[in-house]
Image (cartoon, rainbow, N blue to C red):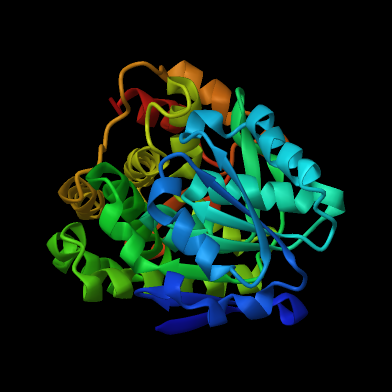
Length: 358
Protein backbone atom coordinates (compact mmCIF):
# COMPACT_ATOMS: atom_id res chain seq x y z
CA UNK A 1 0.00 0.00 0.00
CA UNK A 2 1.08 3.57 -0.78
CA UNK A 3 0.02 6.57 1.28
CA UNK A 4 0.07 10.11 -0.10
CA UNK A 5 -0.91 13.29 1.72
CA UNK A 6 -2.86 16.29 0.47
CA UNK A 7 -1.12 19.00 2.46
CA UNK A 8 -3.69 21.57 3.57
CA UNK A 9 -2.42 22.35 7.05
CA UNK A 10 -4.90 21.27 9.73
CA UNK A 11 -7.23 20.00 6.99
CA UNK A 12 -4.64 17.68 5.44
CA UNK A 13 -5.77 14.15 4.62
CA UNK A 14 -4.30 10.87 3.39
CA UNK A 15 -4.84 9.01 0.13
CA UNK A 16 -4.47 5.26 0.61
CA UNK A 17 -3.70 3.34 -2.61
CA UNK A 18 -3.47 -0.44 -2.85
CA UNK A 19 -5.18 -3.78 -3.36
CA UNK A 20 -7.81 -5.27 -1.01
CA UNK A 21 -8.17 -2.05 0.97
CA UNK A 22 -11.93 -2.55 1.35
CA UNK A 23 -11.04 -5.25 3.86
CA UNK A 24 -8.88 -2.99 6.04
CA UNK A 25 -11.18 -1.11 8.40
CA UNK A 26 -8.27 0.22 10.45
CA UNK A 27 -7.55 2.64 7.60
CA UNK A 28 -10.89 4.45 7.80
CA UNK A 29 -11.91 4.05 11.46
CA UNK A 30 -9.77 7.00 12.67
CA UNK A 31 -11.59 9.31 10.24
CA UNK A 32 -15.10 8.67 11.56
CA UNK A 33 -15.64 10.91 14.60
CA UNK A 34 -19.08 9.71 15.74
CA UNK A 35 -21.36 6.67 15.43
CA UNK A 36 -23.45 7.58 12.39
CA UNK A 37 -22.30 6.77 8.86
CA UNK A 38 -24.29 7.20 5.63
CA UNK A 39 -22.95 5.30 2.61
CA UNK A 40 -24.00 6.78 -0.73
CA UNK A 41 -23.63 4.56 -3.79
CA UNK A 42 -25.49 3.67 -7.00
CA UNK A 43 -27.39 0.78 -8.53
CA UNK A 44 -24.33 -0.51 -10.39
CA UNK A 45 -21.83 -0.41 -7.54
CA UNK A 46 -24.14 -1.55 -4.72
CA UNK A 47 -24.32 -5.23 -5.77
CA UNK A 48 -20.52 -5.30 -6.17
CA UNK A 49 -19.09 -3.44 -3.19
CA UNK A 50 -21.78 -2.26 -0.77
CA UNK A 51 -21.57 -5.37 1.42
CA UNK A 52 -17.80 -5.02 1.74
CA UNK A 53 -18.17 -1.33 2.55
CA UNK A 54 -20.79 -2.00 5.21
CA UNK A 55 -18.32 -4.45 6.76
CA UNK A 56 -15.64 -1.76 6.58
CA UNK A 57 -17.85 0.42 8.81
CA UNK A 58 -19.28 -2.39 10.95
CA UNK A 59 -18.14 -0.61 14.12
CA UNK A 60 -20.59 2.20 13.37
CA UNK A 61 -24.29 2.73 12.80
CA UNK A 62 -24.12 2.53 9.01
CA UNK A 63 -27.05 3.48 6.79
CA UNK A 64 -27.19 3.49 3.00
CA UNK A 65 -28.78 5.32 0.08
CA UNK A 66 -28.64 3.93 -3.46
CA UNK A 67 -28.94 6.37 -6.37
CA UNK A 68 -29.53 5.71 -10.07
CA UNK A 69 -26.33 5.39 -12.11
CA UNK A 70 -25.31 7.96 -14.69
CA UNK A 71 -24.19 11.53 -15.34
CA UNK A 72 -27.77 12.43 -16.28
CA UNK A 73 -28.75 11.94 -12.62
CA UNK A 74 -26.14 14.36 -11.27
CA UNK A 75 -28.65 17.09 -10.47
CA UNK A 76 -30.41 18.83 -7.60
CA UNK A 77 -33.47 16.57 -7.81
CA UNK A 78 -31.48 13.39 -7.20
CA UNK A 79 -29.29 15.18 -4.64
CA UNK A 80 -32.40 15.59 -2.51
CA UNK A 81 -32.59 11.79 -2.24
CA UNK A 82 -29.49 11.93 -0.04
CA UNK A 83 -30.95 14.66 2.17
CA UNK A 84 -34.24 12.78 2.44
CA UNK A 85 -32.46 9.69 3.76
CA UNK A 86 -30.25 11.67 6.13
CA UNK A 87 -33.32 13.26 7.67
CA UNK A 88 -35.34 10.05 7.70
CA UNK A 89 -32.54 8.32 9.63
CA UNK A 90 -32.27 11.35 11.94
CA UNK A 91 -28.61 11.87 11.16
CA UNK A 92 -27.08 14.72 13.12
CA UNK A 93 -24.23 17.06 12.22
CA UNK A 94 -21.66 14.48 13.37
CA UNK A 95 -22.65 11.99 10.66
CA UNK A 96 -19.94 10.94 8.21
CA UNK A 97 -21.00 10.50 4.59
CA UNK A 98 -19.15 7.88 2.52
CA UNK A 99 -18.99 8.16 -1.27
CA UNK A 100 -18.78 4.67 -2.79
CA UNK A 101 -18.65 4.90 -6.56
CA UNK A 102 -17.34 6.93 -9.46
CA UNK A 103 -17.06 10.65 -10.03
CA UNK A 104 -20.80 11.33 -10.03
CA UNK A 105 -21.28 9.67 -6.64
CA UNK A 106 -18.18 11.35 -5.23
CA UNK A 107 -19.20 14.82 -6.40
CA UNK A 108 -22.80 14.47 -5.20
CA UNK A 109 -21.90 12.94 -1.84
CA UNK A 110 -19.28 15.61 -1.23
CA UNK A 111 -21.76 18.36 -2.10
CA UNK A 112 -24.40 16.82 0.16
CA UNK A 113 -21.79 16.72 2.95
CA UNK A 114 -20.92 20.37 2.34
CA UNK A 115 -24.60 21.37 2.62
CA UNK A 116 -26.16 19.07 5.22
CA UNK A 117 -26.55 21.00 8.47
CA UNK A 118 -24.03 23.48 6.99
CA UNK A 119 -21.29 20.90 6.62
CA UNK A 120 -20.48 17.38 7.78
CA UNK A 121 -17.41 15.17 7.16
CA UNK A 122 -17.16 12.68 4.32
CA UNK A 123 -14.88 9.95 3.03
CA UNK A 124 -14.13 9.11 -0.60
CA UNK A 125 -14.01 5.48 -1.77
CA UNK A 126 -13.67 5.84 -5.55
CA UNK A 127 -14.34 2.73 -7.66
CA UNK A 128 -13.59 3.96 -11.19
CA UNK A 129 -10.21 4.91 -12.60
CA UNK A 130 -11.40 8.43 -13.41
CA UNK A 131 -12.54 9.04 -9.84
CA UNK A 132 -9.42 7.42 -8.37
CA UNK A 133 -7.00 9.62 -10.29
CA UNK A 134 -8.97 12.84 -10.35
CA UNK A 135 -12.37 13.66 -8.86
CA UNK A 136 -11.92 11.99 -5.45
CA UNK A 137 -8.92 14.18 -4.64
CA UNK A 138 -9.05 17.93 -4.12
CA UNK A 139 -12.46 18.69 -2.63
CA UNK A 140 -14.37 19.82 -5.72
CA UNK A 141 -18.01 18.79 -5.27
CA UNK A 142 -21.22 19.64 -7.07
CA UNK A 143 -24.01 18.86 -9.49
CA UNK A 144 -24.80 19.78 -13.08
CA UNK A 145 -27.27 22.31 -14.45
CA UNK A 146 -28.80 21.98 -17.94
CA UNK A 147 -26.83 25.07 -18.97
CA UNK A 148 -23.48 23.95 -17.59
CA UNK A 149 -21.57 21.11 -15.95
CA UNK A 150 -20.72 21.35 -12.23
CA UNK A 151 -22.11 24.88 -12.04
CA UNK A 152 -23.65 24.31 -8.59
CA UNK A 153 -21.21 23.11 -5.95
CA UNK A 154 -18.72 23.80 -3.20
CA UNK A 155 -15.14 23.14 -2.17
CA UNK A 156 -15.34 20.55 0.63
CA UNK A 157 -12.33 18.36 1.38
CA UNK A 158 -12.75 14.70 2.43
CA UNK A 159 -11.36 13.22 5.62
CA UNK A 160 -9.49 10.57 3.64
CA UNK A 161 -9.49 8.84 0.25
CA UNK A 162 -9.43 5.04 0.12
CA UNK A 163 -8.43 3.74 -3.33
CA UNK A 164 -8.81 -0.02 -3.65
CA UNK A 165 -7.43 -0.74 -7.12
CA UNK A 166 -9.12 -4.16 -7.11
CA UNK A 167 -12.41 -2.38 -7.84
CA UNK A 168 -11.10 -1.66 -11.34
CA UNK A 169 -11.43 -5.36 -12.17
CA UNK A 170 -15.20 -4.89 -12.56
CA UNK A 171 -14.89 -1.71 -14.63
CA UNK A 172 -16.23 -1.76 -18.19
CA UNK A 173 -13.54 -1.19 -20.85
CA UNK A 174 -15.18 2.06 -21.98
CA UNK A 175 -15.06 3.41 -18.41
CA UNK A 176 -11.43 2.34 -18.06
CA UNK A 177 -10.50 4.26 -21.20
CA UNK A 178 -12.42 7.30 -19.95
CA UNK A 179 -10.34 7.23 -16.77
CA UNK A 180 -7.12 6.99 -18.75
CA UNK A 181 -7.94 10.33 -20.38
CA UNK A 182 -7.52 12.03 -17.00
CA UNK A 183 -4.27 10.13 -16.46
CA UNK A 184 -2.91 11.42 -19.78
CA UNK A 185 -3.92 14.93 -18.71
CA UNK A 186 -1.33 14.97 -15.91
CA UNK A 187 1.43 14.12 -18.36
CA UNK A 188 0.37 16.83 -20.79
CA UNK A 189 0.07 19.50 -18.09
CA UNK A 190 3.45 19.31 -16.37
CA UNK A 191 4.91 15.78 -16.31
CA UNK A 192 6.61 14.91 -19.58
CA UNK A 193 8.37 11.87 -18.08
CA UNK A 194 4.99 10.45 -17.04
CA UNK A 195 3.57 11.11 -20.50
CA UNK A 196 6.45 9.18 -22.06
CA UNK A 197 5.88 6.32 -19.61
CA UNK A 198 2.19 6.26 -20.60
CA UNK A 199 3.12 6.06 -24.29
CA UNK A 200 5.24 3.00 -23.53
CA UNK A 201 2.78 1.29 -21.19
CA UNK A 202 -0.61 1.84 -22.83
CA UNK A 203 -1.28 -1.87 -23.38
CA UNK A 204 -0.35 -2.76 -19.81
CA UNK A 205 -2.85 -0.21 -18.53
CA UNK A 206 -5.62 -1.40 -20.85
CA UNK A 207 -4.94 -4.95 -19.65
CA UNK A 208 -5.20 -3.78 -16.02
CA UNK A 209 -1.76 -5.08 -15.08
CA UNK A 210 -1.68 -4.39 -11.30
CA UNK A 211 1.80 -2.87 -11.17
CA UNK A 212 1.14 -0.51 -14.09
CA UNK A 213 -2.28 0.56 -12.79
CA UNK A 214 -0.93 1.16 -9.28
CA UNK A 215 1.86 3.33 -10.65
CA UNK A 216 -0.50 5.35 -12.87
CA UNK A 217 -2.91 5.96 -10.00
CA UNK A 218 -0.16 6.90 -7.56
CA UNK A 219 1.60 9.24 -10.01
CA UNK A 220 -1.67 10.95 -10.98
CA UNK A 221 -2.75 11.42 -7.36
CA UNK A 222 0.68 12.75 -6.42
CA UNK A 223 0.58 15.29 -9.25
CA UNK A 224 -2.91 16.43 -8.27
CA UNK A 225 -2.18 16.52 -4.52
CA UNK A 226 0.81 18.75 -5.20
CA UNK A 227 -1.28 21.21 -7.21
CA UNK A 228 -4.18 21.25 -4.73
CA UNK A 229 -1.81 21.89 -1.82
CA UNK A 230 -0.55 25.01 -3.59
CA UNK A 231 -3.90 26.29 -4.89
CA UNK A 232 -6.90 24.72 -3.14
CA UNK A 233 -9.60 27.11 -4.43
CA UNK A 234 -8.36 27.35 -8.03
CA UNK A 235 -7.14 30.93 -7.91
CA UNK A 236 -4.15 30.18 -10.12
CA UNK A 237 -2.25 27.05 -11.10
CA UNK A 238 -5.03 24.58 -10.18
CA UNK A 239 -6.86 25.80 -13.28
CA UNK A 240 -4.24 23.90 -15.30
CA UNK A 241 -5.92 20.66 -14.16
CA UNK A 242 -8.79 21.67 -16.45
CA UNK A 243 -6.82 21.02 -19.64
CA UNK A 244 -9.41 19.88 -22.19
CA UNK A 245 -12.28 20.43 -19.76
CA UNK A 246 -13.74 23.69 -21.10
CA UNK A 247 -14.08 22.09 -24.53
CA UNK A 248 -15.17 18.79 -23.00
CA UNK A 249 -17.85 20.22 -20.72
CA UNK A 250 -19.53 21.90 -23.68
CA UNK A 251 -19.64 18.57 -25.51
CA UNK A 252 -21.20 16.86 -22.47
CA UNK A 253 -23.83 19.56 -22.01
CA UNK A 254 -24.50 19.97 -25.73
CA UNK A 255 -24.95 16.27 -26.37
CA UNK A 256 -26.98 15.73 -23.18
CA UNK A 257 -25.38 14.46 -19.97
CA UNK A 258 -24.57 10.76 -20.14
CA UNK A 259 -24.33 10.53 -23.92
CA UNK A 260 -20.56 11.11 -23.92
CA UNK A 261 -18.55 10.01 -20.89
CA UNK A 262 -16.67 12.77 -19.06
CA UNK A 263 -13.27 11.23 -19.86
CA UNK A 264 -14.22 10.85 -23.52
CA UNK A 265 -15.20 14.52 -23.71
CA UNK A 266 -11.96 15.53 -21.99
CA UNK A 267 -9.97 13.47 -24.50
CA UNK A 268 -11.59 15.36 -27.37
CA UNK A 269 -11.01 18.60 -25.49
CA UNK A 270 -7.30 17.93 -25.05
CA UNK A 271 -6.90 17.31 -28.78
CA UNK A 272 -8.73 20.58 -29.48
CA UNK A 273 -6.44 22.37 -27.02
CA UNK A 274 -3.38 20.92 -28.77
CA UNK A 275 -4.71 21.89 -32.19
CA UNK A 276 -5.55 25.42 -31.07
CA UNK A 277 -2.08 25.74 -29.53
CA UNK A 278 -0.63 24.65 -32.89
CA UNK A 279 -2.74 27.24 -34.72
CA UNK A 280 -1.34 29.89 -32.37
CA UNK A 281 2.20 28.73 -33.21
CA UNK A 282 2.93 27.51 -29.70
CA UNK A 283 3.44 23.80 -30.40
CA UNK A 284 4.64 21.82 -33.38
CA UNK A 285 2.66 19.23 -35.32
CA UNK A 286 4.44 16.39 -33.48
CA UNK A 287 2.90 17.56 -30.19
CA UNK A 288 -0.57 17.40 -31.73
CA UNK A 289 0.12 14.01 -33.29
CA UNK A 290 1.43 12.48 -30.04
CA UNK A 291 -1.53 13.82 -28.08
CA UNK A 292 -3.98 12.38 -30.59
CA UNK A 293 -2.09 9.09 -30.94
CA UNK A 294 -1.93 8.19 -27.25
CA UNK A 295 -5.64 8.91 -26.77
CA UNK A 296 -6.58 6.84 -29.81
CA UNK A 297 -4.36 4.02 -28.53
CA UNK A 298 -6.40 4.14 -25.31
CA UNK A 299 -9.59 3.70 -27.36
CA UNK A 300 -10.76 7.26 -26.82
CA UNK A 301 -12.51 9.58 -29.30
CA UNK A 302 -10.52 12.54 -30.60
CA UNK A 303 -13.12 14.35 -32.74
CA UNK A 304 -16.23 16.32 -31.78
CA UNK A 305 -19.28 14.05 -32.17
CA UNK A 306 -22.14 14.89 -34.49
CA UNK A 307 -25.00 16.35 -32.48
CA UNK A 308 -23.36 19.52 -31.20
CA UNK A 309 -22.38 22.53 -33.32
CA UNK A 310 -19.49 25.01 -33.05
CA UNK A 311 -21.93 27.85 -32.33
CA UNK A 312 -23.60 25.79 -29.60
CA UNK A 313 -20.21 25.02 -28.05
CA UNK A 314 -19.23 28.70 -28.08
CA UNK A 315 -22.50 29.61 -26.38
CA UNK A 316 -22.02 26.95 -23.71
CA UNK A 317 -18.45 28.12 -23.11
CA UNK A 318 -19.82 31.47 -21.98
CA UNK A 319 -21.25 29.82 -18.83
CA UNK A 320 -18.08 27.88 -18.00
CA UNK A 321 -16.76 28.44 -14.46
CA UNK A 322 -13.48 29.75 -15.84
CA UNK A 323 -15.10 32.69 -17.64
CA UNK A 324 -13.90 35.97 -16.11
CA UNK A 325 -15.08 39.44 -17.16
CA UNK A 326 -16.79 37.85 -20.16
CA UNK A 327 -13.57 36.23 -21.41
CA UNK A 328 -13.42 32.48 -22.00
CA UNK A 329 -10.25 31.28 -20.26
CA UNK A 330 -8.70 28.21 -21.84
CA UNK A 331 -5.88 25.91 -20.80
CA UNK A 332 -3.57 25.55 -23.78
CA UNK A 333 -0.13 24.07 -24.37
CA UNK A 334 3.43 25.17 -25.08
CA UNK A 335 4.54 21.55 -25.49
CA UNK A 336 4.18 18.11 -23.94
CA UNK A 337 4.32 18.74 -20.18
CA UNK A 338 3.88 22.50 -20.57
CA UNK A 339 0.48 24.16 -20.15
CA UNK A 340 -0.83 27.63 -19.38
CA UNK A 341 -4.05 29.55 -18.77
CA UNK A 342 -4.96 31.92 -21.61
CA UNK A 343 -7.77 34.44 -22.09
CA UNK A 344 -6.12 36.70 -24.69
CA UNK A 345 -6.31 34.96 -28.05
CA UNK A 346 -7.92 35.71 -31.43
CA UNK A 347 -11.59 34.73 -31.33
CA UNK A 348 -11.42 33.46 -34.89
CA UNK A 349 -8.76 30.90 -33.89
CA UNK A 350 -11.09 29.42 -31.30
CA UNK A 351 -13.99 29.27 -33.75
CA UNK A 352 -11.77 27.76 -36.44
CA UNK A 353 -10.54 25.11 -33.98
CA UNK A 354 -14.12 24.10 -33.22
CA UNK A 355 -15.16 24.06 -36.87
CA UNK A 356 -12.21 21.82 -37.78
CA UNK A 357 -12.72 19.53 -34.79
CA UNK A 358 -15.29 17.20 -36.39
